[in-house]
Amino acid sequence: MRTVVGIDWSGAAVAQERPSLKIWVAVVQAGILLRLFPTSRNGAREALQEMASETSDLIIGFDFAFGYPAWYAREHLLVNSARELWRLARADRALLAATPGDPRRSIPVGSWPFWRAGTPRPTGNPEIWRECDRHLRAQHDVHSLSSVFQFVGASQVGPATLAGMATLADLADDGFAIWPFDAPATGQPLVAEVWPRLAARDVVKSDPAARLRWVDSALHKPNAAAGSVIPNPDHRALILASDDAFDAVAAALWLDSLPAVANHSVWPRLAELPAAAQLEGWVLGVDRPA
Image (cartoon, rainbow, N blue to C red; front, side, top):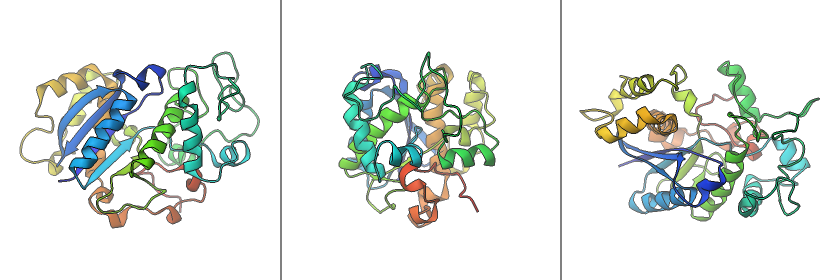
């Protein structure tokens, strides 16, 4: 049976070694939430390795960016492939707690165009969004997206992107396929970038009851066997308590409902996406530009 996993990621340094309430893993089969738990980044990798050993049909959705804007990767990091970029991020993983300007860093997150507390957001004409992000903003009228260069504020995604790309390097070494860089193949665990708000755009995430109503909605009932989408009352309590747990659940249920997840042949191939996706990646479910 196909297993679908949604992971709400974190860039916090503490999330590397021990369970953090900022990293959540949701596991869905046949439209039903079977597992929901917090873990560390190491724990998430181990859990995915275990699941990959137990099933030949495993799909994982992560909610961090799989790359930087292509111009920055090529001109400033001197890389020509996503895997090179991920390996640079992995080299920096031991330096997560170091000062941003540490000269040992492969990715200089303490200098332009990254911005942190006390430093200004880039001005002029540096494109601080990936092509997919720009298309998402235009297509869905979403203007609250944060740039991968942002390392300050409640909406920052920079640390999660950096830590996430390091984990992609690990998973690629473990034999996981990373979409869209790898074509889906039967029997190989597949990782994709997702944006949970695509699944639950109208939910007021700060409202626990609204989060639970969305999960209980009829939207998912056709994909579930008879009974509740959330048969475990403990999972319902976790969704009520944490919007991060909700994001993991939303990503997993949404992924499970996608036609591409049920049929490898309809996953968009890298050649079908804009050229920038070769370095930047692409969010599953975002329509390609005409």
